[in-house]
Amino acid sequence: MFQGYLPMILGGLRVTLSVASVSLAIACVIGLIGASAKVYGGKAARLSAAAYTTTVRALPDLLVMLVVFYGGQILLNSISETYGWGYLDVDPYIAGVSTIGFVFGAYLTETFRGAILSVPAGQIEAGFAYGLSRWQVAFYILLPQMIRHAVPGLTNTWLVMLKATALVSIIGLDDMVHRAGLASAATREPFTFYALIGLIYLAVTTFSVLLFGALEKLSSRGVRSGGAA
Image 1 (spheres, rainbow, N blue to C red):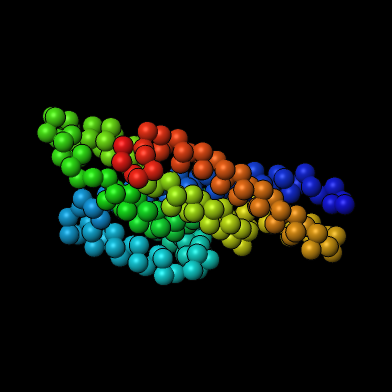
Image 2: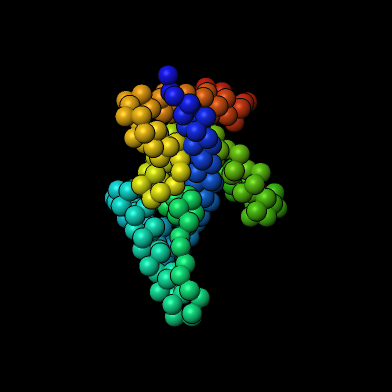
């Protein structure tokens, strides 16, 4: 039915999942930094984080990716020309994960900010009163409870991010969508191959929902339905 192209499509799925996973890790780091800046930072840090989240969430993901890919390449080669390093090419994988991570870091900033604010301030103060350091309070008190509140938003971000990985095919990355395009062009059966990757995306997102649902239950152990421990 797929004329021997199925292994090639599934090979592209590995690239898609790799892009999504690395992008999520980058977005989580950026989100934690942004959320910390908004909640605990000084005025300059709060303004910088607010400018970042407002600007990034207002721009289309594709536009940001094209600016990073082509603009980054121009910038790198401008610097390279100055120092005589020769021509430098931006790797599509690096450009893709960097852009997606940067974009969704803005959304996770707000997710993590809300999760931090959901932890009762009295528990943080009690931790300091018992002589815990700032890092101990963050690791033993804030982080475990913050995860419980952040999981629903994190789940939604992952699902949207997974679909956004299709954008990397625009900059030449050999992902599942790119390979489906090659197969459909060779066989002249675009519906067959695009329907196939649609079903694959559906299967992956369904598995992701189940996985994050289990994570949410795990992080909520010992918490009554009313929200009290």
